[in-house]
Image (cartoon, rainbow over all chains, first blue to last red; front, side, top):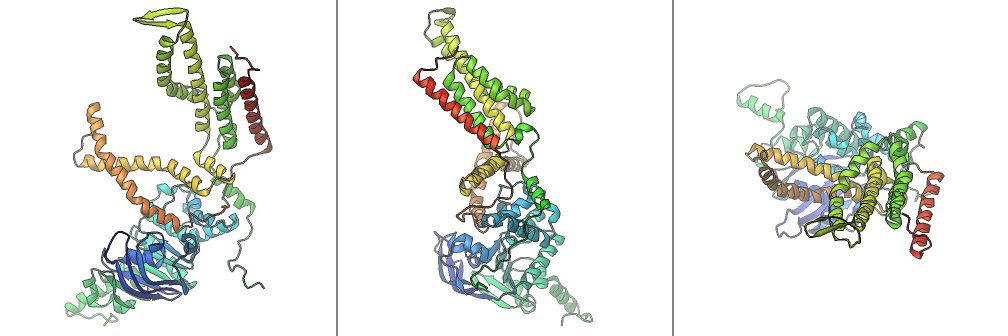
Length: 265
Length: 281
């Protein structure tokens, strides 16, 4: 379980609060979508939920961040890394730059953990297999397409076997097939008991993936509820986020005075 | 059952196929010399260079070249490339050494005169000796560079106890250069699309490089924080040893060779400094 209790946060050197009084609780096995316009605090919330802010980033945090009821404050980054994994948006900055093959790149985390080689290999194969990218294993990680590179970045975090996972726009550079693969992998992970927080602009993906959606605006939680009620709420688009296609199409159909059998009422 | 035991199930032991796959991840070695352990090649290069300088003269550097460098270059099939590269690298400094020593070295035998400067036999002798040592250095280090994958060297040093942090910094630095070149080309293309002129005279070309310097450096710096966070979430910085996926082979004969070279060099150094070994011609 990932939990933020009355969390407010500001970056080092800034007086402005980027998150204010955020309360969020993600149960094990739950996939929670996180939406909001750019600069609304999504990425900061991801950093805070994974313990990197203020741990590594610095800044001032009030309130409490708990992973499986354990406060993250004071945990060292490599301890945190096994409790909650964080996937960033840009695959290029996530590439270590010290490996010649995708296999070694994905294995870097397990190797850093000091695991025996057999365990590192097993985790690496599992992560590559989970994302269906075994065929990339021998490729040079610097010479992949944006989508492939992001799948490798996600596999690199999965190989750490973190108890929970935070993903900051993980499919921003993926094509529809890559997006679908990531969605499937996340669903599979949730069934193993991980709590997942997925920041995304692609609300169609969240519509398929999440049981719950949280919308942030100006650093505070503006909406929090079951995916269908948040994503389907007409007020949702005031937060600068587009609703999933099925809701927009349904609106168009009813505005035209038509009805479709079996459509959302 | 021990309740404090780690819940993480341990993976099945590696099969022979696994081991073969992991070994295949190591950079390929295409010649017998490349297959030598990087530390052996580094020792050969270092001892060849130091001995050439300590022994001096003509015979000793040539002998070192013949014994420690040329056989390796032949085994690696890289002699022609190595000689050309070493000559090119040592040329500029050789020219300045030649100019300075031939005309300024005091001597009794004047070979020819240019203006107020006398070229002496002693000056020529000194210059040739220095150039010879520089050439041996360029050949020895060049052979190491041509036959050693930097990544393999770093991995081998980490296995020998180098801190993973230092190993990472070394490996990342080596990998950064092509990345920065790629970035510079992308920025250059973007600036040319907006009218920057990078063709033409030397002046225009130099002028065309200047607008790239700032963006290349700044864009590299802005990524540093994100990169370091991305590494932290992959447990980089955890203290303690790492069990690396592949190692670079080493064996008893190579260890013996390395120690033999070190002992031989110490012997040369001691006998030369103490005056037991007189300078060779």
